Image 1 (cartoon, rainbow, N blue to C red):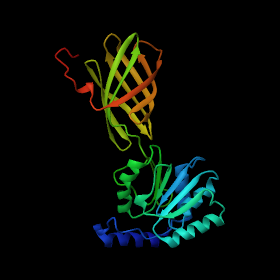
Image 2 (image 1 turned 90 degrees about the vertical axis):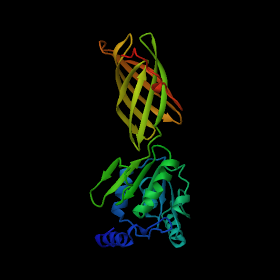
Image 3 (image 1 turned 120 degrees about the horizontal axis):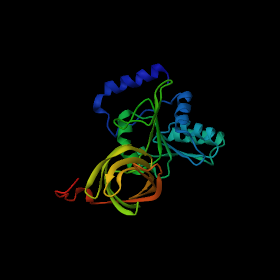
Length: 291
């Protein structure tokens, strides 16, 4: 996209003010090929990817993705039947029609369940309106790439500013809630009650073991992958360091717990399985003998 088109778009947005609504659709202005390539490189395309372009226009993003990786599949959706026909004709001409197709459809009706990469370059307001659909329907780990516009308060996971800004987001797993698990360590059976709060890919939390409470530290969420540490004094064990890594699958997390007593150089590695529940022992009465 050259500078003139860029400023024409900005001017249109300013003149339109907040009047832009869901029934308003984005005009087609094709991204510059160099910017399309930067978007797709940011997504680090893989052989098993399914690239879905919401508002695909003449199909250039999906078509370039198919040329960059000869195994991935692609789908473009657009409201303009003429552009859809042109894109399908281009797919045949480029001999990728067996892996790529374009359909006339509203972006809000697109099926995102199989997508692993979602591309958008729509009006900022429309991208914001699509954000909850993406977070609700796309699988954790799905990469979302955009040209120029962002996704509001959802911070990108990667940005390329070598030219007009292109950004990538990774759809986070659903980590918020009450998590419970048991671990046997040092001949003691320990019951953990953790409460996690989530804001997009940022998580923080608190933990209770017996009548002791602590903070969840260094929490990271990348798609369905989750990792965090805990350091707290446990009855009969002294100060214990914990490192948890796993994958969120619905209402369970399965992975590995590494634990180390403060006076012991050896780390013990144990299987870890947590389950999400409606209630948590974290909130149970503590009593007066808490330490």
